[in-house]
Amino acid sequence: MKPHIKIAVVVISLLSLSKVNGQKLEGDFLTTHLLKPIDFSVPRFTLGFIKQIDQDYSIGIDVGYGSEGLAFFKDSDFPKNDYKLKEIGLEFYKFFESSRTLSEYVSLEVHYLNHVETRINEFYEPDNQTYLQFDQADYERNKIALNAKFGILARLKNSFGINAYAGVGVRIRDNKFENIINPRPSDSIENEGPYPVDIVAAFDNTYERAGTRIGLNVTFGANIILQLKKAP
View 1 (cartoon, rainbow, N blue to C red):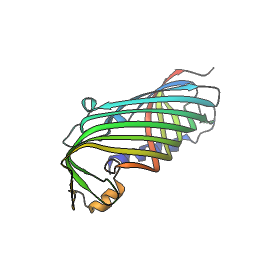
View 2 (cartoon, rainbow, N blue to C red; view 1 turned 180 degrees about the vertical axis):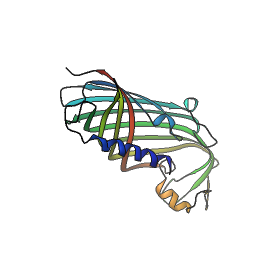
View 3 (cartoon, helix red, strand yellow; view 1 turned 135 degrees about the vertical axis):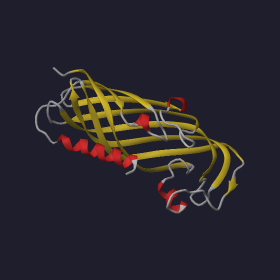
View 4 (spheres, one colour; view 1 turned 30 degrees about the vertical axis):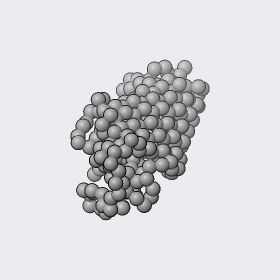
């Protein structure tokens, strides 16, 4: 089973635990993402803060940073040379009744991400029909997304717990390839997978397709939480 499928299964399993009646798990929380530091392609560390406004509503901010030097796992493909990533998210939460150890919520999140790196001996799509290979290029990806999410806060022990979530939204993504060295048309792109490259590109063009596009954004994950202040 692929890693991202395993992650999705874990998140869905955690979300399924939230069907309990009772009082809310309330207060202020520090958070850090459990999965993003071990993302092979775009690893980063995050720190977040959730502030309770009243009994039902909270607001949160989450920032993240990653670089080539901070990556846990390195191989010939990831992370890329001079890799850097910065992100920030603002989130508004509406909590519902659950239990003293589980609290479910819905939220609305605005998320921004900037990702730069140097790509070597790869290809990109300047349009939907042409592949160009190059020796080297400076790559930049900017993404802004608006997501509707459902999740749970689950206390595991004392003030520590897990925030598991899943959601969907809309995103605007802009990919730029600049300072391209030796660009050239290519009729065939090296592909080590079991499927033709045109099928692979259709479903895996997050980084290779240049230009600005609007599309569906899917988000899921799990944060470690530290409860700082319990509600009175």
